[in-house]
Structure formats: structure tokens, C-alpha cells
Image (cartoon, rainbow, N blue to C red; front, side, top):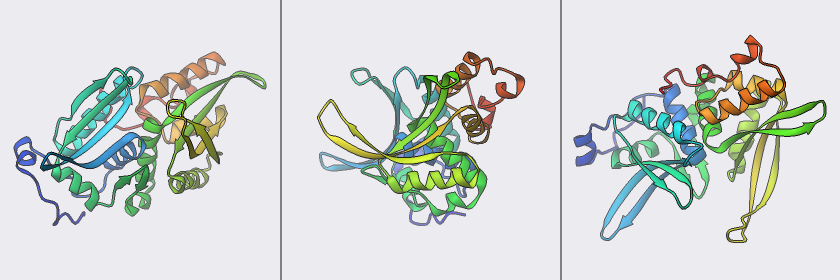
Length: 260
């Protein structure tokens, strides 16, 4: 059970029916992974008032279906319906909700994100299902499935990548792969942002090849349709579309409550 004695609900929290989970769950862990990957938990100042907001971003087109899933997950967990925005100039889809109670709840259970450095509640690592759900949330937001062309005997070769600025968290995810016997590599990456000329240092977790990506998709799974479509495309291109592969990385391997 969480200690939520210091969490106070605003008038709007009560008006719109905010409810706070009292104990850990797979869905809550997945949501924390989503926030860790491409979410924001922030306090902001507007004039003389202070606001608190929780938001999740994705690609305007590629993640449209996934953001619908996240919105429904948000409502199942907290009873609130987040607002949805489109920033067409940056091709970004955004769901967000202002809530003092939710902001304080996340801090109370041990989650925080400041300048891409993420504090993950220690209890997330206590159970296998919680760890896997958290990992799925990160993968679905800050991960990718790529198909490399003309790689050895394969015309198309699948690769899963997760890249974060939080070096310690990526190392932790790599340890989880080792623990679950998923072959992976973890290395530093130096990237140039062509928009502003800045150079960023990040760390990447990479899983390569049909056997390893297949194991990842069976164990971790995905609730992001773009990842699942890309994986199924890889299977189809190499004619590995047998019944076993068909069930590898389908929506059923992710959250048990997928909608849409």
C-alpha cells in the first residue's frame, strides 16, 4: 500500500473524479514506463498561479493509435480523461492533464523526471511482472523496431533500440535483459541535433536478430501498433510467418486491457 497522507486533491481533482491507486499494479508500472520514455511531470508558473501537469507525447501520425491507448490507460488508472492536442508544426501528438493530486501522487510513490534524469520507484523492480510492464512502457514510447537491409543471409534484419539520456536507467534495463536471457548490447551514442547544432550524449540498448527480437516481443511485448506492424513486416519479408511467429509480439503480449 502506498503512503499517500501528504497528497492533497484540488477542487478540480474532486470535481472531475480523480482516483489514486492505493498499491502497485502492472498497469501503473506500464504508465510509469510511458512517462519515463516520452512523458513529462512538471510544475509551471503562469502569472501569479502555479500549475501541475502530466503529459505524454508521440508522433502525430505514427503514434496516433498508441496515444488513444495511453489516454484510455490514463482514465482506467486515475478516473480522469486527459486532453489531446496536435502540434502540427512539429508533428507531435500530446495528451495532457492538469492535476495537483496526480502530480503529488507520482512524487509520493517515488517517480520523478527532471532534465531527462528519471527517478524510478524502487518497488518497480520487486516483481517480474512489474519490471516487464515498466520496460514495455519505455519501449512503446522511446523505443523503435528497425529493419536493416542486406544484413548477411537476411534481406531484412530486425533491431530493437531504446535510447535515453539517463545512462544509469539504460544500464538497469540492460541488466534486466541479462536477467531474462535476452541477448543485448549497451553502448554510448553521440548525436548531433541539426536544428540547433548541439551535441548530445546518450546511451542505447540494442537487441538484434530474429531470435533475440522474437524473444523480446514474446516476453516484453508492445501495446504500440507501429512496433507490432514493423515486427510482423519483418516476419513476413523473411517468410517466417508461421503460427509461432504470428503470436510473437502481438497485442496480446502487452497489456491485457488493450482497447481499439
